[in-house]
Image: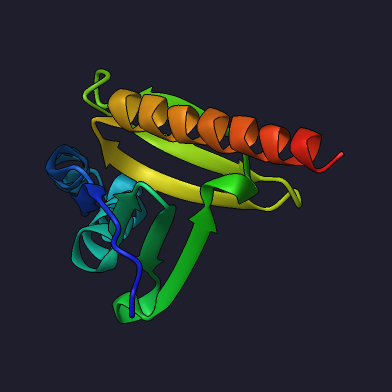
Length: 132
């Protein structure tokens, strides 16, 4: 029996990332950026629930990375595309990082993840103090 998860966001990168990088393709120098945006648009998917953050990507969407909120140390975000979308990095407690490029509504998603991180930390602290 699977655990029910409430989905907060499910989808791919922002369309504006593909459009902007598509327009930059006319300058041959920015062609690698365009190819990267096309690959992200085709195969990168994010799923943020009340229990975890899942990122599916890689060649043809065959790689998957999951992070439970108790594993996340902090969230770093940088706005792009005039602040319409942004890049986020989830820094895990073991020092590894998960990148989320061209995240739509990145400010709201960052606030949601930070809220879940503090909620998990407070429940963990309550559990530790009650065991003493």
